[in-house]
Length: 201
Image (cartoon, rainbow, N blue to C red; front, side, top):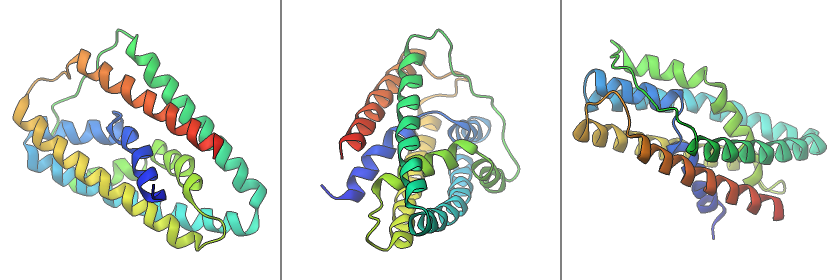
């Protein structure tokens, strides 16, 4: 299987995991319409584009200059994936429900950009995932950028689809608890499998 396909399968459950970006986008859908959600998605993707360039160049420099540090980042990344997997599986047994505020923004693109740019979880995901799929013997910068663009493209497709679906199916301020637990449990299991695969490869 292509390394890019494996990367896509690894980040897919992360994209479906509710976070600041997804909650902001869905709040725009509920506060206005699907178009507002898609405009917010464009802003979020632009924010991650900045992360992509910085992280790709930074990882490339680390690989060339500090191979031991690169391996350290790689193992910390695997540990972070396992932590996320545990947190998601744990949430399945929690009684908390996910609520979304109906709050529209006058400039969803700008707000989405800032939301993604200032989201520390986004940067952690890049450092946790990208190093696992970069060949140290190849062009590290181009590999990092390609992987980043794949991640951004998947975010764009998933979040736009969710905007359309969410606008069509419901106007409720609360996501169905049972469905959310299924999503969390499945995502957690997939992340655990991805981390296990990275450990043995």
